[in-house]
Image 1 (cartoon, rainbow, N blue to C red):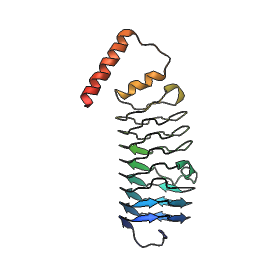
Image 2 (image 1 turned 135 degrees about the vertical axis):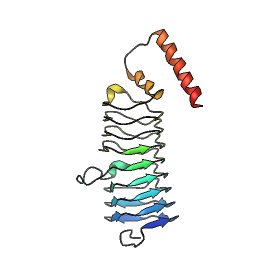
Image 3 (image 1 turned 90 degrees about the vertical axis):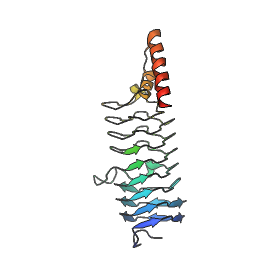
Image 4 (image 1 turned 60 degrees about the vertical axis):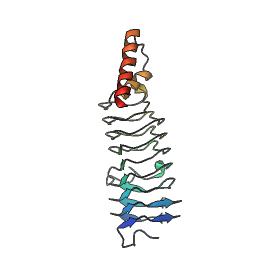
Length: 214
């Protein structure tokens, strides 16, 4: 199927099996409740596109660029995004957005993802090492077991995020936003010793926050 020549701009409840797009520019397409099975997007451009409640898990995206593209309430599990073309084809690229998505086991190593949105998502065991995440939006996202090493987190927003283990000395933190109690995890990577009174106060605060969240 050639998505470029297809006159449709909206696709609903479609299953695309073994879809192989090569060198296509896909502009202003909307995908709702669609499933992509064994799909390969090679050297494509997605511009002003939306994927809503779709399943793109294990899709392959070699040399494919995403500009002003939104994934909403979708699954994009196990995708190696390092094979995509973000940040390598000029300044026309606009931020990509993941909202209320599941992107577990994905890889973003070494990418330039300034201003990316990964909000209200489940992003477990995701690799963000050596990535530029300046002004990234991680609000209310579960980042359990995800890795941040030599990552630029300047002005990134982790308000309400949880599960992250960010070592302050191994990453660039400048005006990075965090919220309690999760922000206390930043202390564990520092070579400091809390007094017994402070440890007791910290445990009391964590217990109180846990009770309030329940």
